[in-house]
Length: 330
Picture (cartoon, rainbow, N blue to C red):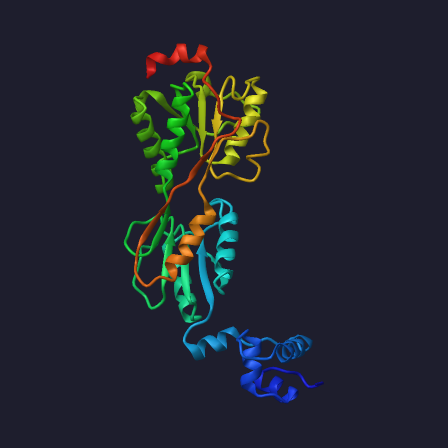
């Protein structure tokens, strides 16, 4: 077989087999003797030949491609989510085709049109800004930044932060601060609403019990902390929480004896820090598993994933001296 092989028909002719037999073997279908299937695959590998997924999809009307549109991978902490999504898709025989948008609804629509033209089995949009729109291809929106009906899977950030407030209150904290959590996007708004809801359930006045700080700069005095003594900090994410651990060490503060710190994301480093970091696990594995399941279902639905509070060493009983100084604020 010295001549190049560019099609299933050419490979079948070279092997003296039917095109039907070769096609089924290359696509993993049953009904072909194992020895024959292995002979066909070995011959295909030797010629660097693989059947065209797109050509097969055009004939069948769809491929086994899963179109995934995401915004910036770093700012949205999507690395773990993409890994879990790819694993869940592979378990169902789907191959992931990734498109990174520029964070605008227009670029998301362009990606959706591209996936449709490629006969993708379905599309998953992570943190989309575009509203849901009817189309010929099934789609699921994950943690959408725009409101709307359709198939959606959301992380219940509000309940996660309510659990954080409950946890800190049970430890005796009465004056806490968020760090870098702002209401300028839907995610931040949901977290602040949840933290305030948890505070009210615990009997706090959120306006007095919760302060809001920006991220401290390394090596510089942190004026918000000096002006408003608190006993616990709730960070936007684990990356900032680990930075707070470093800042506290430079200030001579013991964690958690003098100050408790809570992160978000359950990053791989959060369990390895010293002390280990109390954080919120948003369950990206369950989030992506449910998104794939929802994509394959015929009816629209909305699913909410409940994150889990992971309590580690960075939270502990509030220091009594600071509680006495700030009790009049609660």
